[in-house]
Amino acid sequence: MCGIVGYIGNKDATNILIEGLEKLEYRGYDSAGIAVVNNHKINFAKHKGRLSILRDSLEKNNLEGNVGIGHTRWATHGEPSDLNSHPHLNPGNALAVVHNGIIENYLILKEELIEKGYEFVSDTDTEVIPYLLDYYYNGNLLETVQTVVSKLEGSYALGIIDKNNPDILIAVRKDSPLIIGAGEGENFIASDIPAILSRTRKVYLLENDEMAVLKKDSIEIMKTDGTKVDKEIYNVDWDVEAAEKGGYDHFMLKEMHEQPKAIKDTISPRIDKNGKVNIKEFSLNEEYMKNINKVYMVACGTAYHAGLVGKALIEKYAKIPVITDVASEFRYGNPFIDKNTLMIVVSQSGETADTLAALRLAKEKKAKVLAITNVVGSTVSREADYVFYTWAGPEIAVASTKAYTTQLVSLALISMDIAIKRGTTEGTIAKGIVEEIRELSEKINVMLKYIDEIKNMADNIYKSEDIFFIGRGLDYYLAMEGSLKLKEISYIHSEAMAAGELKHGTLALIDRGTPVIAIATQDKLYDKMLSNIKEVKARGAFVIGVVKESNKEIEKIVDKVVYIPEVKDELSPTLAVVPLQLLAYYVALKRNCDIDKPRNLAKSVTVE
Image: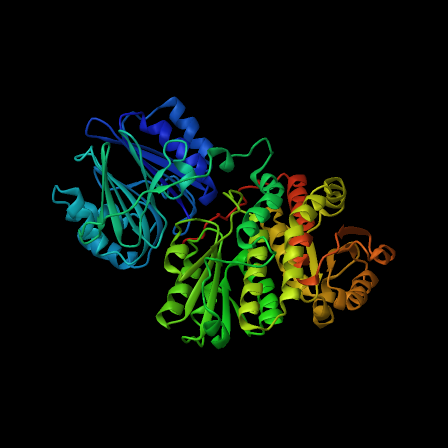
């Protein structure tokens, strides 16, 4: 979940490293550091806290040099501190390493190194790497790195520099994202494309167990066993501005307002001129579709919440049982997977470690895997049998918004495709649903105009210590997403409950003034939701209702109400989530929270 950047060329490395880390701070921001080679010496600076602390330090004491590595951290081993910050160096400061991932056998390696006389100064797993490099160093940095990585177990993306080989930067990748940027007279490494996009659009995507030797005028890519690899350059076709705030106060606010375009960009290539779904990336034939015995929907966090909605769509229209599971639990539950199983994995980044592990298990069992992801060339997209890209553009805020809504419309289209191929839904019904999917962009534009109303609601609840979200059916799945958005950026304790379960415990927590967000957009469950709302109102709750615009009678029951345009029940989460996103944003804003970088979290979860 950490961010890595590296540079080799003729320019000042420090400024380029800091510039790159600024674009990667969403991956971790509890500490940051850089190391630069100059005159056969490694100079470094690293500090606990935000990148701005490191930047201020370097303004007073710039580290000169043309080769360097940088890191912004999300702590896994050891609390945030100067000592635990990266880069980590060997005794004597001849070698420096930045690392994203987890070294699972670090305790064994650490004990072995202690027995050899090494003294550790940090609590991290990473520190064993420079010490191993020190122990095995033979003057040839490439050979030494290959020896060391053969002893590492776990996940890692590494950037390594050596004062005795100042014209070389080495990168290694296993289960953690790492790219190589190819420039003119300069080359780069990074965890993600935005870090180097202002410098080059030519990128190599490293696969597992691949490494690269970078010099200022050359890039050599190989397997970690030394086998040469021929790799095509990926040319980035989106612009730098897409990863900038564009005048908005926060990335989250910008990304919420980008949802109409993101949805349009995602669905347009998959709907033909006759209004029929045409998903070229998902080429499973009708015979296979008819033989599918079950679907596993596996994801984490927000993507999991999207998967729950996708489950309902597939079961309703394609008539296939769908089992949803959080990826971190999936492979420990002895899932029944065979060649007639379809697994759908959902991951914004395409690098989510637990989701990747589930994907690989499914492939071992001969199941077909369809990945839904937002990142071209990500590990999930490369390892799945089929990939459906959500064309949401870069999503920088930790709290996902446009990724979620594009995942919802992607799953809606996929469910229609499967249903038509299985013959379980009439073409006229599917065409009507597709037409409503097409209208979602404009309807979200309507929802984004409710800012004043949402701000007013935020004023009513931002001082609360506990907030509850309730719903039934798809509204319950949406309640889970709304609750997550609120808790992760405002730090208010929040729970989502199936409204019918209130009487089985949760009502004990409802007191006078307790905010309850009641989502009631499912027509067939609307009357039952009104009864549940009355239950919490009878206990003194302050209720904000989210309903379709035709249901005005709710105003007699709730304290505040947000209306969404009329839409089919199964598509309502795409609209109803928008006021929940805005509410979370304005509550967090009132509480002076760091909205784009909530505490203890990071954007891309690349460790288990």
